[in-house]
Amino acid sequence: MNETQLLNKYFRTGNDWLNLKKKIIEKLKHEISESESIMLEKKPLEFTKPASVSQYSYLLFPAVYFSIYEPDGFEDNMNELLPEELAKANAAGMVYCSGFSCSSNDHDSGGGHDSGGSSCSSCGGGCSS
Image (spheres, rainbow, N blue to C red):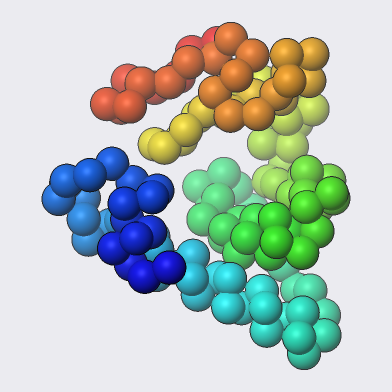
């Protein structure tokens, strides 16, 4: 898909945050290309575990890689890369929030994004559970 098609498919219409949206698309395309390169060239996986939650952006590449090439082991593989404080929270079934979405690890309610009784505000109001 070209950039316009991706913008229309994955983002709200309008010019708000347009440069950021384009950067996200560019970054994800790069991460997908890197993932393909690793698989085709059979390079060893060398993901670095972030030291703290403030470095969560380093998890984008492994998240893209595992979602494409190892979807059945995605959760286990990503849990190994989580900083210690997130790994503990994940094991406890807590709700996670970011500027874009909420997710919970409530396996009884189906888990996933914005489920299990958690709610998000699209205008930056945060999450609740």
